[in-house]
Image (cartoon, rainbow, N blue to C red):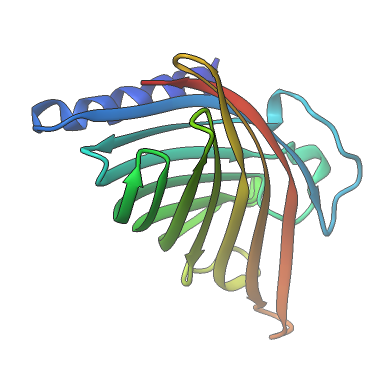
Length: 211
């Protein structure tokens, strides 16, 4: 219920933003599960704790706004973040079609490390899509948050995420997606002073609606 309420709120906020703007508005919203593996992972599983969601709007095929929530079951992750919340504003540098473009953007990322709490910071991102046969497109996106502050014994946290995959529109207004996501957290130990890297990676499977 909490996830559903958050997704409804995100979609509502995104839908309200372009209400007074001129130009066509395209959007998409859906849910997915991240079947994740990590450097400190014990047992792969798919359950409600690993279900996230996204909502995205494009104005005049130029300006985009996206919010996404990625979740991992906290019980099977001892160090890597179990929840990542992203909000990004994007601009298409080149746009041949609705599903063939290159975009750059700025955003905000918040990572939660279970009971330890969360940390956040600004990020930059790049995204590209290539349309194939009309109903299918390939996508790739990468984001970097260079300074996310300190949390507990972690200092100078930073984050890199990469996702690539494909989206199929089998029916009008319906989208299915499958992809691979890799998320890296780098930090310096406050006691040891050594640099450490924690990674989460795995398959993204989901779907939603688009208009």
